[in-house]
Image (tube, rainbow, N blue to C red; front, side, top):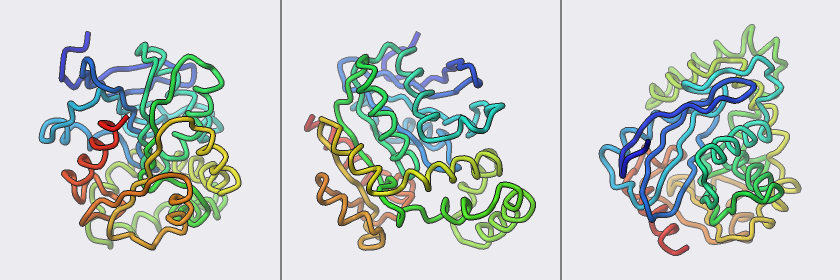
Length: 269
């Protein structure tokens, strides 16, 4: 059983493989699901839970299939935004959660939108709020995924993967991302990228956002102000907030600023 304010590791078995996730209970508080981005995993959250005040919400923080400690599906066709969302719906059902705030970072934003639609159609879990932290809203947001998806799976596995790793290794501050990216592997990266690029179009994402009948918040790193073409789009869909002194990895660049934005949003629900 989960004890108050404890962070524990849990496993949810799906037909395509097991999903590992962190569960941090906060009785009487809002429940929130944090969905990580492409090639990332849940490992960052343990440090935040230990060092930051995150008990303003109960948290479910999974490794998406193919990432971190979750299994890589035998059928890579399941690594789509809707397929990933369906697995998360199973996790929420296993936890007995009936109301949830979705917080999606980067690719996790696309998964959150697919999940919101699935939860609405199933009617078992109410989405009480939606936070997209530089979550993919249009084609201009697909920085890395578009480069990967432009290559065939065969070409990416043969040449593109090693070239990408070498490129990232030459950049400062990429050691943590390289670690989680290598764990995800080239097959996961390519399959998820192809689906993410296909979904990252305003004509797809905007109706999904508008269908969320709950408060919404769009978060950007201050260093990326004006960089994302979707920033103007986000302003038409809900409030926009910026995390000071932060780029895309906002929860790593400025943890205090990031959690302040999330805390304030949840407090207003």
